[in-house]
Length: 250
Image 1 (cartoon, helix red, strand yellow):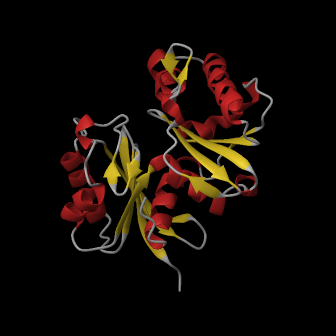
Image 2: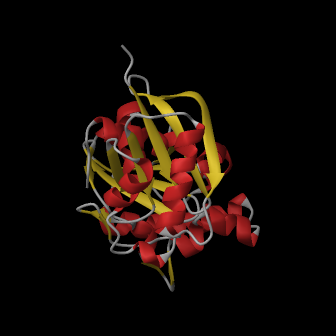
């Protein structure tokens, strides 16, 4: 019997959700997306999540990713969402809005990294690997032989005078109307800093812009290999579904 769980990926611009086949990592049926509310306060976001789950007519366990550090079920940061998230017990929040069902909540890039180790490139399970998502910000997951070190948030590391994600997130590329070559220079600078600090054997890059990887990964100027994530922009959804299936709670 196929094991299916529901995954929701909350980002700075949109909230996406779908049923996930946990044997293959594939989305089941049509996935849904709605705009992230503005302001993105805990209750407005949780209400939007409940609406999305209702649209999909799902009444089972739900895994949810958030763009923030989550420790002992409590939000410790608030990247690209409202600062009122800090100190919120995220499990209690979503339980109030989704009712009596099992819920797991974890960092969005951590979820995507876990999904990639299971259903993506086998290189993700070998040695020290840094998984990065380029979107509204830059998310990160540290993987050692496929095992996760959670809540790294490398997008907040300063590279020169600015945080990395304020220079090289894909949202910056769009906002400043950068060409792929110009944006790739910024990504190279950021990856070079990460390379110097952590010496990974491999970078895996995800997020929506990874679908265009042929236009920018070959332009990067670092020696450490960089490959696109196989799950592209659905990795967070898949990782969220995996988390609730394994009862993962940071």
